[in-house]
Image (cartoon, rainbow, N blue to C red; front, side, top):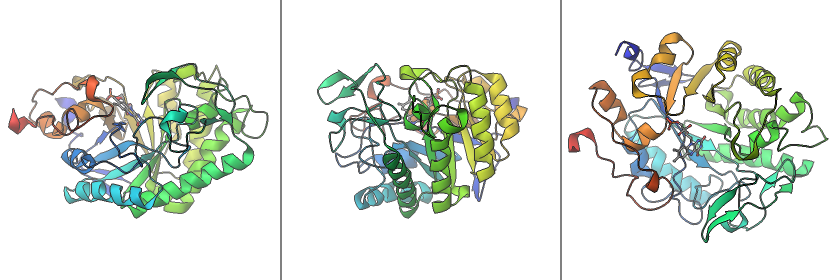
Length: 357
Ligand SMILES: Cc1cc2nc3c(=O)[nH]c(=O)nc-3n(C[C@H](O)[C@H](O)[C@H](O)COP(=O)(O)O)c2cc1C
């Protein structure tokens, strides 16, 4: 319990005072309507979890091209803005804070899953060599279309528009999804990016897209409402950052630091030395998510000074009253993987509160 002292204190995140130092990690739940408007239950789901210091929503695509999976929400049309507004208002009514994650899936997409049914787009025409769930079951992901420079510039505009839309919906800020093998990390990794122009090759060139997206969004909504998620060393779905990986992240984090973004959120993949370098290079808030971190270690990274905020995914998914349960040292519900993606209120809004058990 001695790790817990700081956990429940108020936390400062840029202009926002959070009610504690714990964050709900972004989690795709694939329950949006067909047009990408957040579904009926989204407001209830997030409001149930509003006692965490900060909610980072599931990834929301900034454009038709940005969608990868079935029934994920978008944040680029008026209907999306109105839909998100209901969720955001419900979280704010409970005193919570909420950032929308902007996720462009890049090559991790299938034409059957997108509104325009086009091929996914990517830095280079290299397929991820994996399958994806579609309405007709698992299918191989086809080779993506390599982006032209003009198309890259358009995607940056799409991100900017999505960030503006998120703020119009009332969000406290946005998180750029630069992690987990999606478009931004596809640019970072030589295994997915073999471009010979200014977006490929050297570390500076491979980091350029991430930096340009962050710069454009920060200009649009303010650096103090712009965060970014990174997962250095991910080797999911054909992503390999090579030996230069850690150096690339030191460069990227240093550059992002000059923009003054409100936070970097690291989904930690195991390189402790790099994580500690990022801590030293980054002068703003650092959020750390350690996958499958045991409950007993909650607060450990806060106490050591490595993290300013700690993020948890599945424990918050399965425990709407995660904070309360921690405070009274009560057992946690187990997350049910069968209901992670798609479906109804089952496994979404029906996890019991402590008071109901
Ligand atoms: C159902 C599910 C959906 C996820 N969707 C996203 C997502 O949309 N964006 C993202 O950055 N990470 C996503 N993640 C990763 C989580 O944010 C988190 O990093 C991961 O679950 C490890 O943390 P945990 O062990 O505390 O759950 C997802 C994880 C799960 C379980």
